[in-house]
Amino acid sequence: MNKLQVAIIGCGGIANGKHLPSLSKIDQVEIVAFCDLIVERAEQAADKYGNPGAKVFEDYRELLANPSIDVVHICTPNDSHAEISIAALEAGKHVMCEKPMAKTAADARRMAEAAKRTGKKLTIGYNNRFRADSQYLKKVVEEGELGDIYMAKAHAVRRRGVPTWGVFLDEDKQGGGPLIDIGTHALDLTMWLMNNYEPKVVLGVTYHQLSRKQNAANSWGSWDPDKFKVEDSAFAMIIMKNGATIMVESSWALNTLDTKEAKCTLCGTEGGADMQDGLRINGEKYGRLYVNQLQFEAKGADFYDGKKESMSDKEIRMWIEAIIDDKELIVTPEQACVVSEVLEAIYESNRTGRAVYFDESN
Image 1 (tube, helix red, strand yellow):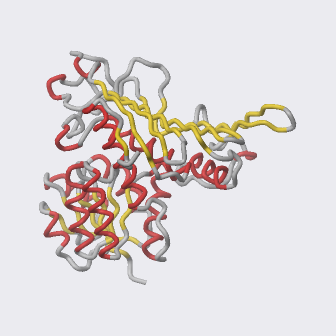
Image 2 (cartoon, one colour; image 1 turned 120 degrees about the horizontal axis):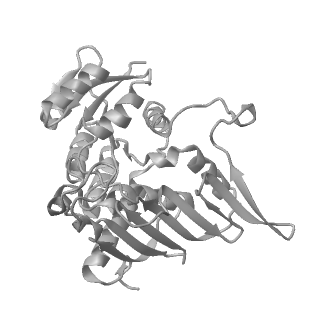
């Protein structure tokens, strides 16, 4: 069969750190077009990852006008996700858009509707679903080992990990800070593992506390308080329609040593699980409490499963296979849309000081 012709729109860090390296490992793919507002970045990416004759664009509309392109990966700031994704879908392309799905819930819904209308595949880059521990825990949940999950925590906490480059601190471009950046991964992972996408009410709060500090210690250098326009931390409680509760914690800067990113804790009627120091499953059997610690890294022949595929490589491979074989997506636009709706509800709750109900009759 002919190889899929793939294009990249946005040739910054996430494209070069994740999408392009993973796509370049797939035999059924040719990376034929690169687009970025900074043309030099697109040229550099094309030189490193492009097939012979790969084209470079400054305007994504010109790229989408090429009928030979089958698939588009969108790695741009959040405020352009919907515009570019919808245009690509309507141009007959399959689309992988980086997380979060969109800056607003309304835009996320428009994207999902465009995918349904055009019949093209749309997925969102929630790569933490493809980690070995996440995949294992999904099977545990599906087999009923935890019973009914009625309490969960979504963890996305950094002590000092503020991204000071690009547009991360720009609320207009991104829509928010750590909640929409890394909290979205933890929330998506938690809701996916629970298979629960029916929120009832959300109560949330955001903080601008450490963001005001001058010359602060930070993994990527001190931030400029005058440019730090997004929250530095956010917390929320989500009550689902079936009564289950999800607690969300996210921060780029918080005075804590209890740091976990893209992790979750699940508590069910038959057992529980957490991603603290690996994956731990807990429960009781024969009148005794037990904890099972799962090993996911090779430490001798007993633990080696012969696989070294990274979560990003697996994510991209399964996405391409879903297109070639017309298989069901692992991350559906409908699921990602609910995540965006919950994120927006947390921000709205903070602005109004009130709980946000998804069903106004409640």
